[in-house]
Image (tube, rainbow, N blue to C red):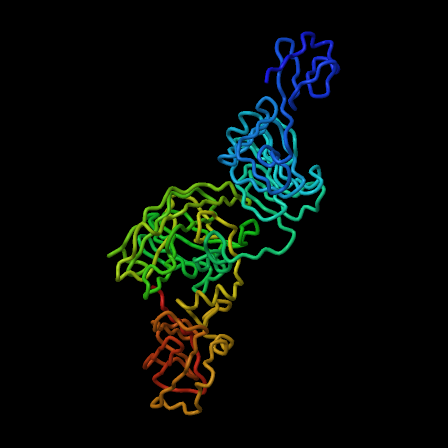
Length: 497
């Protein structure tokens, strides 16, 4: 059917409208036409049955195409599930962001905030472009902060701290690498190692001196100084090594070497079953000294003092950590123990420092620990440190009185339960000395009479020669030629490596 449109659109009521109800002319169908100044445009009245195919009406409806709002200000891509926002967005409910391209977001100046409740107070994560405002932000290449009120893992260059609206229970400082925790910390490891007894070095703080607090180290020789420590002196002459009590030291004690030049080192026992045992991966070696140190030597050996059949490990150069304590400077280096394994005959790892200062040099706080970071020196009870040392060396003489043969010295060194009233020279005496801890191997025994005579014992009324020594790892028997009313003397047991 032909339709005759109004010749004067403006004369229509409503103006510029040609519809079934317009006057004076009405359209003969159910279509409404509108005059746009050039032509008539048709608008079809939709039947409600068409709505489901044309509109997203209620929850559960799916939109299969893309949605663009404004001039590309908001674009939702139904194909890949992505969205582009030219401005900022605030979300009052929990929101999951599967992937966020921080580089492009920074370039176009966007900001993403994930909030819970009041966004001004309870910001959970806020990522904003450089130069934008906000207290809790993280930006690649700049020093900002990132805030988590729930679970999360973050790498950041600034501080991680509760907002000022909250009590600062946790504060992590990015630049300093430090952390403050008000509550308890529960952890199964630290730097990949155990929490206690991290330090593999025994007597690293130099509190145990069973052989005496002052020793003469012979030139071009290996001399035990403090317990577990050996000095290879190459200063050109004998040198004195003493305990150095210094309140400014990190340990309160140290080892002072006069006219210092040589190699100070300690042997660490290997697990003979697994050979390499605990020494795998990265370990950090650190210590304090009062003078510059040349370098570190680390190697597996058959014995502590033999370089035959050794396996030498490459050690990176020492660096000053920047930590000081009075005149003491801390140095450290990290060693890769996976670079080599010990030979079958190696029983120990030796590690120490080479130095050539030519002046008195003191050392303390030696530590070898798992991981790539030098942590503060591990202070163990001195009694524990002493017991650990006595696995390798023990003496019944504590050095607090002279070996001068006096009555007090004789009584100080009496072997309990060894005396006999028979003083006949034909009768022998047997004394038993029990070691405080089981020794590494059956030790070599040395005996000294109370007056300092080597290889003799006192059997009242005088010294007698030693007839036999019968040690195990737990005790030794001392048998003398002759007997008396008491048996007295020094016993030293050596199970060093």
